[in-house]
Length: 157
Image 1: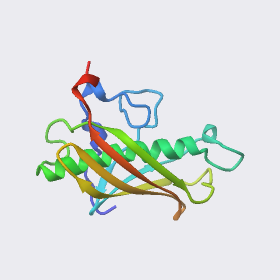
Image 2: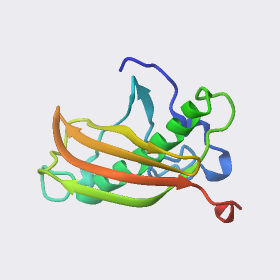
Image 3: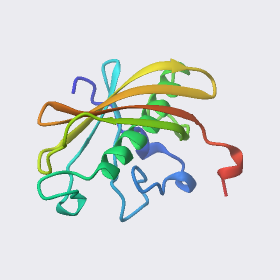
């Protein structure tokens, strides 16, 4: 990665940092971390043996989860960049998924590190659209689109 920026999820406010996919405060979660790599976002994840669909392959729910949380993390990064703020300069904005579309292109092998890459295709004050790919050992096995919206105040405790 060309940009060693910190992960946006490490700067979510504590009261909204419990997501199973990316929440740093969820002891059982994936702890997905999303950073900039030039004009793309990237997250990496090593699946464990229990992420099995059939022997040797990752189950689709994990793939959808990674695309989902990478998309909301990418939205937070894009929002910060649009505001001229760096990751770590205060709390990161929190986004939630309004829409998730996943295309499974081929079986995803269990074993190699998974890499999710995102490209911001639309950004407004309230909404960010992210096109993504998920790769294993350099082979794209899934692609997705996430429409992320700013977390509504009604979701905050």
